[in-house]
Length: 172
Image 1 (cartoon, helix red, strand yellow):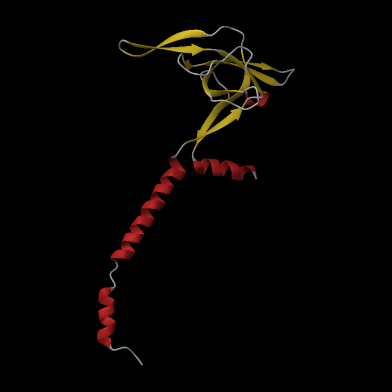
Image 2: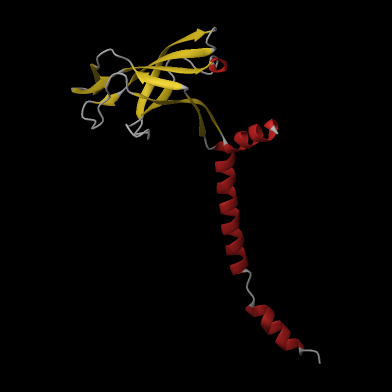
């Protein structure tokens, strides 16, 4: 049996599109935020060294000026690392990296900021020798000693998630 017309009109009056509009607005906002992240966020791509070791040279205490009348002191060590030869065009002077010294058990410890100062290609060994200097606070609890081995991670480039996806798809 069909419903009477006044009952149908009453139910249509009670159905407001307000809740649907609120849900659509929230969904649109989330989608827009995700698109902004996907196309504009920057993700660092790192390359790891084959071998890295703290040089035998003694550490230096280097002052850095952080404003008028303020001087901070930093410890500076020299690290020698080797990379595959094909990394030569991706490594440049002033490039930022992180040195992860290994502990006695073979585990990697906390990372220390390092900067590339020099690189030399060895064709007969097919590797690239890279010299880096560390920058760490004088008050840092971690004390590097000469001949400490570890791993260097160099930031090669920064890409958006979209570019990273395109790179992965083009490799397949």
